[in-house]
Amino acid sequence: MRVLLIGSGGREHALAWKLKQSKLIAKLYTWPGSPSIDFLSERLSVPQSISKSDYLSVARVAHEAEIDLVVCGPETALAQGLANIMIDYGIPTFGPIKEAAELESSKAFAKEIMREGGIPTADFELATSEDSCREKAFKALQEKGAVVLKASGLAAGKGVFVCRSKDDIENGLSRLYSPAMKEASETVVIDDLLVGRECSYFALLGTNPKSASGRITPLGFAVDYKRLKDQDEGPNTGGMGGYCPVPWLPDNAADLVHEKILEPLLKVLDKRNLPYCGFIYVGIMWCSGGPRVFEFNVRLGDPETQSLVLRDHLDWLAIIADKLGLRPYPHLAPKIQAISGSQRSPNSSSGVEDAISARKVVSVVMASRGYPYGEGDENITPQTLPAALFEAGSSDIKVFGASLVKEGGRILTGKGRVLTVTGAGETFADARSRAYEKVKDISRSWTDAQWRSDIAQNL
Ligand code: AMP
Ligand code: GLY
Image (spheres, rainbow, N blue to C red):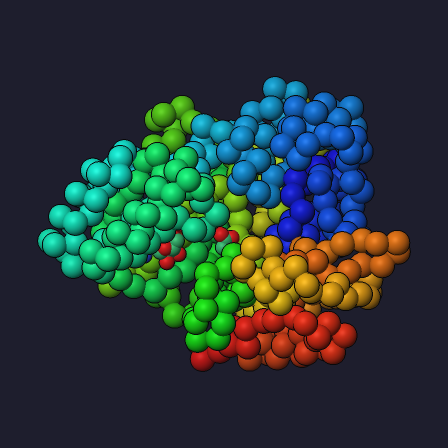
């Protein structure tokens, strides 16, 4: 199969690595791509003058390049209708259409779906003006002692405010209704505070009723560290590292997620005639009564994906092709069915830990000095990273690149989250020491890097 992967981050580098290992891959293309993904694929030859959100032009080029299948990494492309456009060009796409991607791009929509499906989440109200939001938030604070204000639209992780006082609410309102966030805050979700421990669950969802792998293929749980500094101090980031699986969850955790969240979700989407083919990322607060959803994302996590790909031995491309039904490619169908069907039992989460490798995986993000303020410190000096860092690696240790710049033949560090160093092992201690040894090694030549030193410590 000729596959096009959309995206350019560390998550997409990990996805490219995983797709490249498939028995079904003939050629991997990427767009917009990155210097590290270039080691695994060819960039789709979209003219340089084309803007990054001109998906119509990308679809036209993909069609000319005879792409069989598109896999989309980032949510923004999906929210802007990438899948709809590709499908119009007859190219099967793994990633939901715009209308279903609203599960992430509209928290109000996600809440409505959860309410309809009886999916456990925080009780909530909606507000469509600053005044009504204030009034409802003050009332909730008085009655419940705490309240969470969330911009309904995409806000790049900056739209959630946990409030325990009237001052917190006023601070949240001034940010939510500031010019930068006004559009995302056209509707604000006023949530009850969930108390518990955070984790995420990942799966592949499909619409094909004849799928050999069923409609849900689990990838399992992972945990992300959102704060910049050790012991969860410092500002919020896109994620500074993480681990999978999650040892502190009960044994039946995956079954509960399937039964209470994913199966009802598919039921509501079916009822609304919203086909969903793509990754799903469930943000969960594990409370005393079990899992409660605080968000759905229509993609995989970054850096969670970098951990998941080292743990999971399945052929993701075969599963993706099977989930899509791939009707236009009958010559591949028997092969796809054979590979994906033999991998994991249909619609079952039981035995997730048997089916998914028993290995433990730890990912550590190395970021530029200055991250996450703006795009990072303007004065950082780019440093050269050896190409071997990305070419080499094994299924025990891999370095995934995100913010990198190619200059001449050299690969230079950029601004923001630059690398994810991922180690796997039989125990978390093994996985940690592999990852941190490599981090230390890299930091000898990249002296400006910052990273957390407590990822997966004391689990
Ligand atoms: P979200 O943008 O919905 O992923 O929320 C970002 C972060 O806010 C989550 O990672 C949670 O830590 C927190 N959060 C969101 N909703 C709630 C809630 N109802 N109760 C407690 N924490 C929440
Ligand atoms: N690591 C969190 C996210 O991808 O949203």
